[in-house]
Length: 205
Image (cartoon, rainbow, N blue to C red; front, side, top):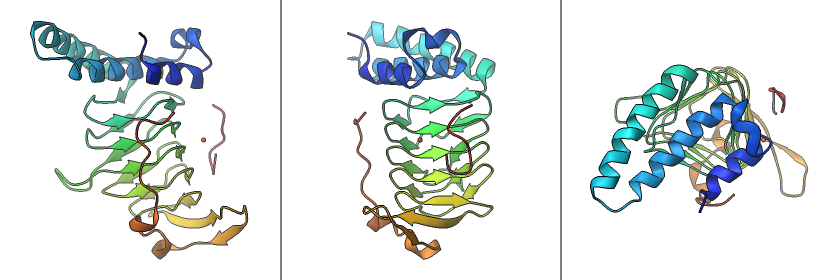
């Protein structure tokens, strides 16, 4: 049975033939393979596949410039536009249907420190940096070259260095002002793990 998360990744890129033209899918396939290997019962088969995973991981990381270690948690349907320079810390959590672009970094601010949590449908522009134990709410957008060091509410847009929150959209569809203090992490919904995207960056290549 094929991995449903992998099928969702393929569909975000245009279907089954997309792997031939989308280098980012190579990195995603290796990531999904590593997760399947970790779910296997211990034994010779798992140990051999783990060695194969690390060989493929280093190869695809070097060739594509995309580092997606199997220890991070990535929901189905991840889309990476314009491969290259994408680094995700192993402790990062990415929800379903998220979008990354070239140069994106998701990591900690201090060694062994907490890492970001991206809820479903989050979209990051080129060279955006999200650092530390911050939560990006469902459907929020981060502009190109922004440096995010604080929580971003669901539906909000964050731009700049350090990033400032421009606005959030209420459930009724009206824009409401939002500031740095409006991003309290306890006001954001929890990540919907296991569920099935441009602010300042366009929604196309």
